[in-house]
Length: 257
Image (cartoon, rainbow, N blue to C red):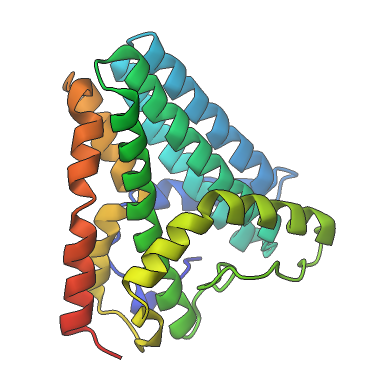
């Protein structure tokens, strides 16, 4: 089951792990394995990748980075397969992502000649990129019939807990989520205030935007690691961030409310 109805699905360049995710989610559907377990597992894969970078095992690091992306898609698929949507799981997934992104870039900084402040700029850049992708994608899912609406366009208040989860836990993870993502959400919302008024985004536009999906970002990092271009990763991510203004410009000119 997808986040979008079949007729609205687009080529998501960041979602290459989806076929594997669906297969494994179906295998786990009737087990005691929960989406939270899967989220913890992709966290472990990400930490192994970071350890491999520190040990200069770049091919292994690339493998576990890609594996993390694939596992990252399974938790949502499993939640939909089991019909157990969860705000706790969604927030935990996003919190793990930002922590792993930070640690991965810091590990690259540690073993390369990349400066600390260049790494910080790269981290800010990769988060803004992902936020733009999520912003447009969440808008699309809310606008189209049959789209997944667990994620909100504007995360301004803690949602009501869904069956099977604690309201206190949801509130806690919501506070953590808004603390670590709030500044990035605010920046992207201010850069394209009118985007949520659009009735829908065409498939070609969403495919271009998916260049900023976390899966594609990690794929690029993995490729650069295997090519032994670790010194250029942070600088590339900073330059890559400039595409934000191109995408927003395309949206404003060609996709109006």
